[in-house]
Length: 227
Image (cartoon, rainbow, N blue to C red):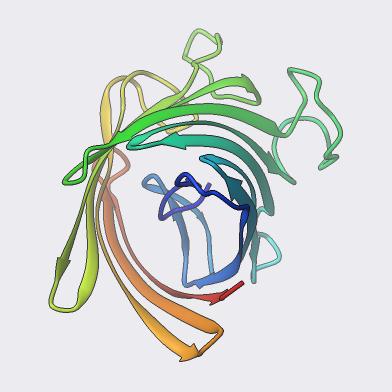
């Protein structure tokens, strides 16, 4: 559940690996508070638009939920599509067991996404289609969904992204009783080259969730070796 984006790939002629780790002051995802100071490692490989990646989250606070995500994605031009398997060590009835896939007890959530990068704006749609998804008031599966519009731009030597996220219908997964705006955010980042083989992007993100009436300010940095 990365707070600052999703895995994607451009068309490469050779396999391109990625490896890195983020340290964040707070784990905020789509307007939801998911934990405190955290380390978020990532590993992936992309080839001709197809990518496979792993992403995790481990909080410094022992009470924070641990997370491990696997994503299969494909990108062609501005178009992207993907499937993510989210796993958490809490929730469901599996008592933290990873290899438990029974529909009503698993700690896995399966999400499909589709989007298009138009350049000035990026549109993304996400829907949970299986696993430990949220429910409606009547107890039925909500097929919890999230739609985001983001606009990247450069200003004063920084890379910025403004984004607006909304939940289209009722689900306790996002804590909504119907259509709701859940994420209004503005983030900035700057790449700092530490050595010839190591880059450290530094970033900050201010966001608000009008639905839950909460606001957040997150700062962090990444360590990305040049592979």
